[in-house]
Image (cartoon, rainbow, N blue to C red; front, side, top):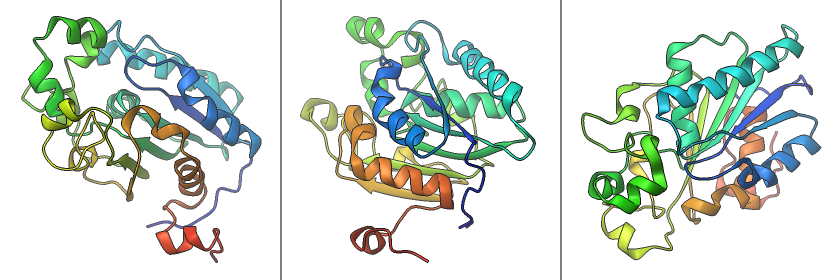
Length: 234
């Protein structure tokens, strides 16, 4: 596992919000990363309007924008929430990005969600989540499951708290109210962290923001002991 720091202060960080959200939900991350010298693009995309295979166009447009200004030494990192992680995985499966940096996914349904399996035929669920929401189950129609292992430097942070006991009843094991802890994992990930937060708000946690920054800089998360010592790492 790499533990090298990011030397280029002008690296890009692209933020991709989750299903049914807007880029405002990633504002705390945007402000923190910008304050550290990263060039941040907080993408706003219509997550409930199109299926995943069409949403990747927004990622492609943003990457083209980054490449216009990037030097060969500067990298493009990504921080995603929920569906944003699947949109990114879909893009990277179909496209090569030579200057790809590190990726942090917050609460990604990397193996789908049983919640979608149970609610897929519900009219209200269809309206609220749109075409992309229908693609996040755990059966043969699941887009995340078809994407296979990752081949980039990925850290995953997922919560194990829920504000919706009804949804959690439909999800086996620990969950964040939308996905199970186990189904957030994907083969090839570099590090994995469980935190006591709920799915919709995980990106606003100071601890999560600190761990995200640390992974982008070092390629791993801080251990609990390191975190308690105030990041006094070698």
